[in-house]
Length: 255
Image 1 (tube, one colour):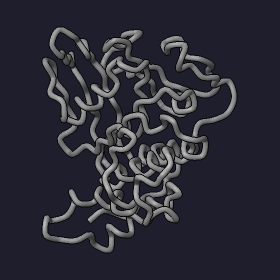
Image 2 (cartoon, one colour; image 1 turned 90 degrees about the horizontal axis):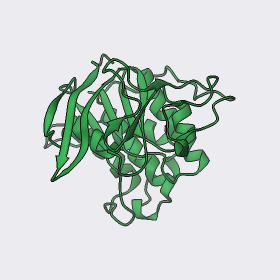
Image 3 (cartoon, helix red, strand yellow; image 1 turned 135 degrees about the horizontal axis):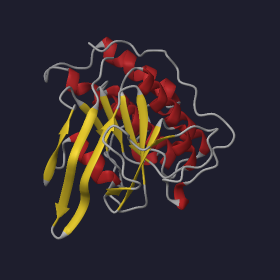
């Protein structure tokens, strides 16, 4: 997949007297996974919403999203729609269909592959409200992947999940980046930070330490120890172990 870089220039969001994002400059490159780190309330979700185009900027600009964005927002327990896992993931294909057409064979094949990749096949006919937190997060990640967009934004996909779901989600995001997609997700988990290609840290809507738009955070590598630019509560021990191995396999071509 051929994707362009996504850039924010002096991106500012104000809500009343509160500045949520303060003149933020950043660039997200295709073929890489960027984690947006920081404590709750620092602007991580706002940043993703701005890139997705669902939240307008007070000032500044976003470029590079014209070819499409898949945005998977956070869900609150009890707020999930009355759909099965398979139906939820299939929703990701509707944007590629004419409004009067049902999913095609190629769409069903793509959905089946995503269910298998995220170990959801046995849960395909189960309602979302019967899933565990980790199973629900995997389903929502599969929904984002099903859209086959050149930019994938996922808000806290590793929050509150078990170790197995964490690995499945991180592997799926890494594989999507290997297809040339711009992948950005918010996270606190040290394993997610260690697996990322880059980490951008927000505090009160400001980058810490500040980075030029061509330097998105600090590249994470498991052999380089901790990152002094990250808050203590999201530091991880990256002295041993490697990040997820990226699969170069490709999903079936979308129609």
